[in-house]
Length: 263
Image (cartoon, rainbow, N blue to C red; front, side, top):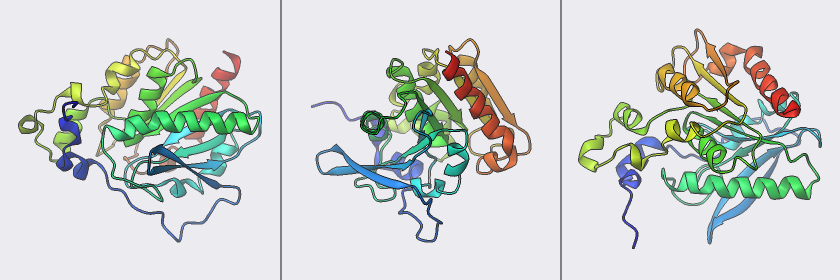
């Protein structure tokens, strides 16, 4: 039997994950569709798909905590206008998904989300160009995929990402010492992004009160992309970064997509 990873202690999961169902009053994107698939026998997850032009790249997006795929129904049009197909990956227990999330399963499930997204793109005759993007909590699965599937992925976008797990857990009130948790038990995003030479964009709010901008700077500094980009958003916090950044947020993404089209 494999040893239990202390990162999956219920106290950690309860502090890190806040799963909830989809909000019933969120306006629905007219072309959105939910695609449910199994990540393991008896456990289903969701890809919420917002189709863009057939030959445009696809952004596989992993959302932040306390969010679900349907929360992006309104913003999806801005991604489609880039142009891009926008696919939101989900976590266990969020939206319509089964199970209970943990810091181990949400990384494992990201691989299944990538494989299923790839299958959908091929079945629909869409461009194979695929960028992974993660916001906040979702930065870990995005970096995980970029590091381990570089041959399948064209680019990486990190928004409000965390570099190391121990400082984040400390901020959330988890005493990592008594649980025996160190960085080797976490996603190790700062180390993984060091192996990612794909076109990379890091965006972070200057006044992020949950994940300090120093984390975004550390991820950007560690990236192996020689032409990596960093968007610092003055006056913004953790939950209003795209609103405060306005068009510069999507201009930065469009520039990243432009790089993959010419690479």
